[in-house]
Length: 325
Image (cartoon, rainbow, N blue to C red; front, side, top):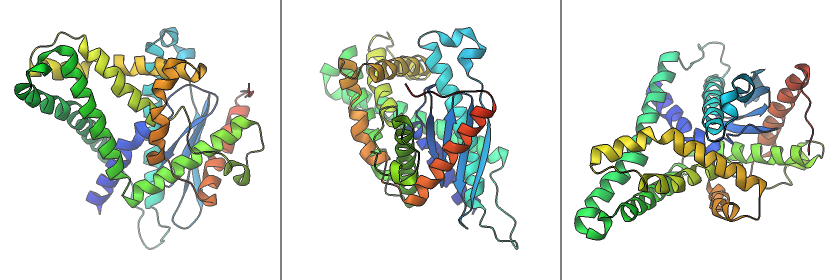
């Protein structure tokens, strides 16, 4: 049972960057196991529907890094800080949702919980899997191809092929994992989160009926962000003078924060200038949401609205005021 729970949690952990909006905005969110986390500028709430139908939630205040430390207001660095905070919140929300989803409400059985050591082991496994699948495997395959095709000995050609392989692996992984029933459900909650955020941003009353009229494709989705990360990495790796396999592999790990920060700025710019070239480049991320979002049921939209309402109430209780521009 624990082994199954571990790999179930690992699959959801791998999806965190895909399901996370990742930017300090008015309202954002993330799908979790059988629920949705919504956040306002200074508060958050994760709501989860238990197997018995009850909605349980966890809420709390959020402190924006850019308000606490001036360095996180600088370009690129603000993206790294914002994404790190978003991932930390996502992991906390995922753990809560996993515990709630595993609690079947049977008074004769002790609820199964995700322990701290299991969560830590899961995060280490997930990070190692990410490095292996998206860094080691593309680099190893490209290095093998370089021996067959001399044209790949050039830095630009090598990293272009490396990047294409990485994107193909990413697309294959998404398509494969979407066949898992657990992940299909989290993609439905992902769609619910997008619909409810769109409903809120429209200024219309946030209801299940109104939310269901909106699309599930949102430009601030983590799916778009990850695709941009892979495109930016091609350009960054191409200018790094790494000759050996070990040096190339090390650079791919060390440069992760820089690539994430640059990608954050690109997404931010594209969102503000929808007719720009950068906006066109980020458009494929919206196409990928045909895989990572699914039409939600009314019950799932209700959970997303519950999370949004609780986050809004906490935001107001802290003196915050949300104004839709």
